[in-house]
Image 1 (cartoon, one colour):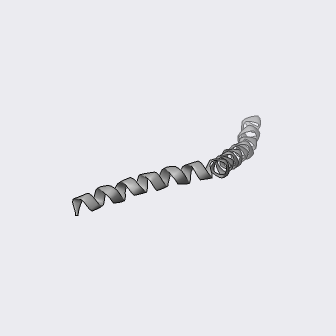
Image 2 (image 1 turned 30 degrees about the vertical axis):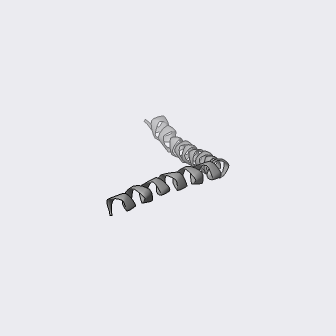
Image 3 (image 1 turned 135 degrees about the vertical axis):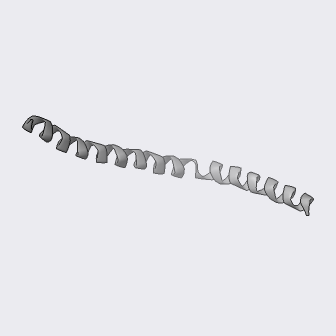
Length: 56
């Protein structure tokens, strides 16, 4: 039973490391693809504005 408790405590540290690594990868992807994402958002926003002006 004591071994099971020791293993569960050590797994908490692994989970934290996994979360940190996932966040680091996501931040790196955002930095790498920032320009492409902003261009896509700008196109989408322009389309929304154009469609909204047609309704008004």
